[in-house]
Image (cartoon, rainbow, N blue to C red; front, side, top):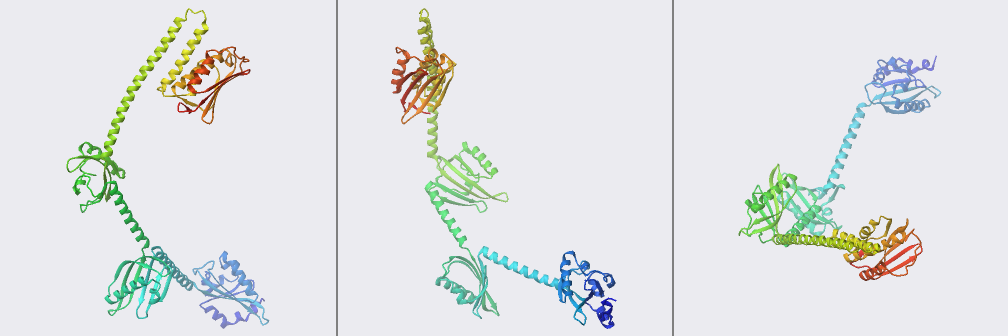
Length: 587
């Protein structure tokens, strides 16, 4: 037989009867943790139908998966002679929490031959413990919330006991108890005296006190307090006071800042000549601020504002103002407008008005309005508009005359060109005739360009394009563009024409060459460089023609420039260096 058969514990009828009737669960386990005995209480606690259902079952299988490693460790320790205690919920059964004590059962030699387990249902105890912890947690959270709220609103409370001469103070820092003199002694003499006066007043009169006052502490802190104090009465005798105080330093600072801003606004409105009105529709009270003088020549009455925003709008502006007012109300934005009004003496004035309606429940509550006399400014604007209109008419008339003059000059150039053709028709030399006509065409092209700019100015690139494009040969720009007055434009246009004609007959454009126009801006001057490349070899001329004289005399004289002609073998280079001025400037 196994050692169980030899066990006197289970063989003893009295002990077995005691185990069976015990209200606590009793189990006996083999050393390996197999259940060999269980009473009815243990079966009920572990969710078994009867004690026999547990016999032969591994002890670890009676507990949930997560608890099994710990259960096995307890069995192992008990098997080696160490009693163990643990609490857990079983794998089955209605009870959520059981307390188990595992003790070794030893033979006469002191060896562990079995394990004794006692089970106790601690569900109610656990529930009570959890409830107590929950109450403590809620109380702690409420206390933390109250301290946080006190810190947020800078609130403190206190209770003074005159019989014990103590004060209990509760604030964001916690709860503390001091003597009355200790509590009051933290403040400067003036604040301490005020606290004592309030205490004496409430104690003697037995009536609550409420007020606001500044304070100063000995640690340097200063501010304002809103205080409420009430007596604690027993049998009609004041035995203490209970009070609360809120630090309203920021509120007072904000209130003072608003008051300063209102004073500044009033001064600004007075200096600007503005009148500010606030109408309370419910009480029909009208408050005026700003300028002391009345823009309308007398006091305004609430009925003046019966037709928003102001009922004294001149008839010619009334429809427009009412439309603007309706639009501002629909958009929920302030009303802003300029309109005419009639003073009390009948004089018409212009005013600038800003107004806003404050509503409650869709009904007008208050109207805020500010008006400023802008009659002088408006008259100046009207005078300026009239002057600008007359200037525009004058400019239009001047443009008409200029267009007519341009038309006649163009016709004159065409007539000169026609007469030249007729006069030189019988000349046997075609070249002089053609040169003359080409120069007239170049002059006409520059003239047309200036006409498009109303004879004010033209750019160097525009002049070059007007003169060079008719040749249909390649050219390019490099450097900044220049802005030329009419005379400079005509001079440079004729110079470019002479250079282009020379390039066409003798230079780069005679073959597949190119022309490059370069502008180089220096300190107070600009260099315009005409350079040719890719043409036939250049030969220096034996005499100076019209083109050379035009460049070295006409252009040099008109622009105050220095003109240099370099008949290099690989292409002509013409350099015109002219001073920068209002007539010739970088574009």
